[in-house]
Image 1 (cartoon, protein in one colour):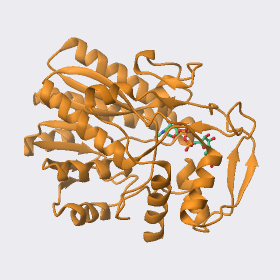
Image 2: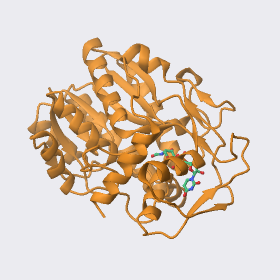
Image 3: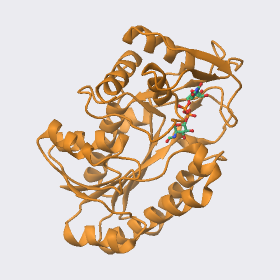
Length: 334
Ligand code: WQD
């Protein structure tokens, strides 16, 4: 089976390519290298002894998308490609809407034309908005998103719903990620954000590496167990395995539309992350308590029951492993 993985050199995409190749899928990658490096392909090859074909294409150009489908018999698509920085999306909404929506629409148009109707889509827990409860369940549906990045994910979910409603021969699996952290245990794949990171773990790693002086903990007066924000952190390899399971299900069923939370079901606070990172890696992180970050919620985590029951998927790797693997990757790549 030929799987087109868009954004396949990125953080979650690269780990998913490795899992797919290990399961004997053939992988074709489309990635414009806007937030990834070509060297990741060498690393995927090192881990799997297979080198996927790479199209260094910007999917905003529909002719380029079509070229990929003309040259390869694609059986299914896993669509990761997209801009994902929350803060930047607030400052540059046009860039985010244009990129995330246009690439997806081009992909759908070409998939439809070539009768490729199996799609796994990277969505996010951010689409729940602020539902007023801590544990998010798929049936709660989409809420009011707080930034253009999140709105693109929500809009794409809606587009996919409409596509399926118009033509039930599609097989679409929407995966709502919680907070992916960690790295491949080999130390060869991990998250390498450009510039100053926004997310907690990349920021912690820069502080641990001495590249940034101090971590700001955004608020210690939330109504949580220790006052800091609580999230559902999930190991990126568990997440990658979830994509393979989602793909297997749509292959088996042939058609249908599914939505799954991919999280562990456990919430950890910012202080839990800091303390665990220090403990397992035997180092100290310099931090200060800073004001709350606008738009942040106090606490949320997944109810992952549906993915367990329908995909047979559960996250297996714990917080210690996530912190160890993140730092191992950073150390190997500084
Ligand atoms: C986690 C916790 C912060 C940085 C975002 C997006 C979401 C998804 C994942 C993906 C919070 C605290 C953070 C720092 C801190 N998007 N924090 N100091 O905000 O849960 O989710 O990333 O593509 O859509 O919204 O993740 O890692 O930024 O924050 O104290 O320097 O860490 O306040 O409680 P978040 P995060």
